[in-house]
Image (spheres, helix red, strand yellow):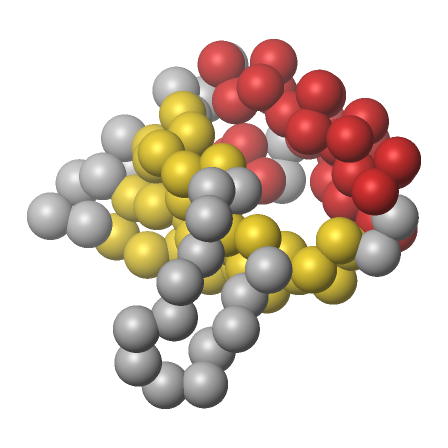
Length: 95
């Protein structure tokens, strides 16, 4: 079953976050991950949610998504992201 990591990001250090963005694609390859959404324009349709940047990643399974998130390959980019943004991230299984 496909799984998706959905991220709501508020960037606090644009320069460092650009380094993060450059590093991430190579880390996804080994886990079969791909971007479906990467920071496009956001428009709130209902409720009070006002995200600044949304990212959606697709993986073939939740296990692959979690393996990527906890991998050595992603450890340094993750550290950069955590220092350069405030992030809300969830993992959800699809159909």
